[in-house]
Length: 96
Image (cartoon, rainbow, N blue to C red; front, side):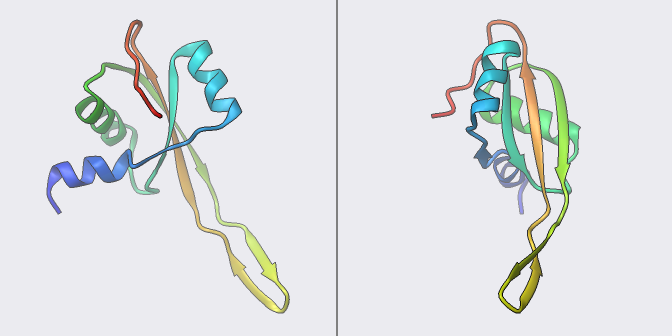
């Protein structure tokens, strides 16, 4: 896998929620679903290169696996990570 493929894989899914939209309006932050093994430096590089913007700060939140049942079958939900990327003043990403 080349370097650019990894960058596109990191920022493949924006998270569009009411809370995320409020965060975008309040502090110019955009939320992305990123791989669990991605760190803040990789997320910063990916957003800056893919969207051509300047990143001010990156916060991450890890959602752990949870036990789920469906009838007799027990399983787990997938673990995932959310990255909240705050952009510099005057910068914007067209998510939609």
